[in-house]
Each structure stands twice: as structure tokens, then as C-alpha cells.
Length: 55
Image (cartoon, rainbow, N blue to C red):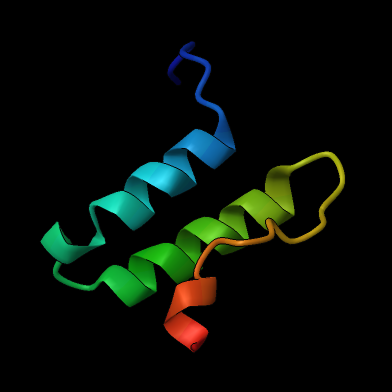
């Protein structure tokens, strides 16, 4: 297990910024959002991520 601290929002931002380089970007974004929502203290959805895909 890694002992590095990674801010979930920073990780999601990186995924969004680099999604054109990911072969299955939609699935990666969906999985990352689910993980953050399940593992954050509030459990509430992260706002703003992926919104541009729904427009």
C-alpha cells in the first residue's frame, strides 16, 4: 500500500485534463467518481467534474 497522499480532487482533475489520452476515458472518469464518492468523508458527489460531457 502506498503511503503517498493524493488529493482526490487533484486526481480527478488530472484524469479530466488527460482524458483524450485515455483509451476508455468515460469509464475511467466514471470509476474515479464512484471511488471518490464512496471513499470521501461526506460521500457526496464531487461537483463540476464531468459536467462538460453532459452539455
